[in-house]
Amino acid sequence: MEWFTAEDYWLSRLIFQRALAVVYLIAFLSAALQFRALIGERGMLPVPALLRRTRWQAAPGLFRLHYSDRFFALVAWTGCAVALALLAGADAHLPLWAAMLLWALPWVLYLSIVQVGQVWYGFGWESLLLETGFLAVFLGSGDTAPPVLVLWLLRWLLFRVEFGAGLIKMRGDACWRRMACLDFHHETQPMPGPLSWYFHRLPKPVHRVEVAANHVTQLLVPFLLLTPQPVAGAAAGLMIVTQLWLVLSGNFAWLNWLTITLALAAVDWSSLAGEPPAQSAPPLWYEVAVIAVTVLVLALSYRPARNLLSRRQVMNRSFDPLHLVNTYGAFGSISRVRLEVVVEGTADPVIHEGTRWQEYGFRGKPGDPRRRPRQFAPYHLRLDWMMWFAALSPAYAGSWFRPFVERLLENDRDTLRLLRHNPFPDTPPVHVRARVYRYRFTTWRELRETGCWWHRDLVRDFMRPVARAGGPDAQH
Image 1 (cartoon, rainbow, N blue to C red):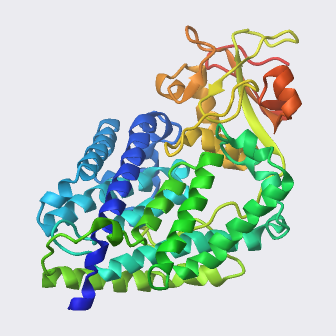
Image 2 (image 1 turned 180 degrees about the horizontal axis):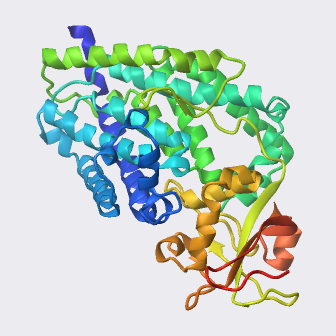
Image 3 (image 1 turned 180 degrees about the vertical axis):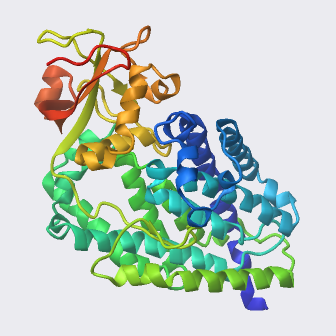
């Protein structure tokens, strides 16, 4: 079947695959370095407890067969090793079936992690990585030309990511329709980056241009992906530029980079590549597998497509337990005020008016007003992100915040590794409390005079002082 392959897209596939391997590497590294405190056997939300209260059909994965922290670490570090092998091009030196198995391995490993990750893995980019990784299994490699159907499925995924994000904005918050959301967003986004202060201080007319460009890129440009080249490639290029703007303005884990990876697959790089390498005809079993997967994805696309058209559109939702076809979207509503939960401890056995409270420092989320926001994306600081949600509503922290505080009271080593600064390096605190502050970016004048990037004001208590087990009760 001559229509089955697109020989000119061999370089597009190669660029896509190597970029996806980098994203896989970062995702597995994030899991390996953070899981013990978050979902380990002694973590805030232990995996064994989850497995006991849920059925395997709802979230199948390797950890249904066995769980231990050592086994999780093996899975995560194996994922890192496989991602490095794919980045180095190991798949290009394997037979087609073996290359497909090599690409299937990180998908299975990461699916298993996401299935037990609970709220820490409830972000849209987890499902996006799984859906992208599943399609990558069927892209082929080496001497086989890329299948046209899978290339179109990647465009269909990119269409849903961008168009879904555009629709949720127009339906969700009036400030997007008034072109005013970026008056707030750079300041109130989950984790500002080192340039976010400057983006926030841009003139309001520039913010209007930002919003207008976003609407064009997300609501109109996606339809150009369905057109022939070079228009489709130009549309993908516009998406890449928009995503790089988002990379500069904040920390969104690997969401932007994975979207860029998808866009790279929609660009025809043949003009830069010269003559394509010799490519053999795909075997019949491979053609059958690709056609079957295409039919499966199209069938599973019904509910996500219906969600796109619904007035009650939801974002970042999976409709099947394997996260094969999902719905996406981001920032359907924008916070006008930035609230932050500040966690403090004290060594005083009895709390009194003069008690000295010392603040814990987080790696990414705002804390010390003098500390400039840092760049962490595409690495994902899961605790810092959930702290942003906790400030929006205590309901987001109901399952994990108290266990987090209990581990601070124990000076738990794995939990403290998630933090930037522990004010009690030698002896655990006797009490820990949490308070909500309103943060805002300083003005140019305030920054010059005080050296502070943030100004903050106390709003209320988030959690009243909690005493260490066996310690004295808190007194107020």
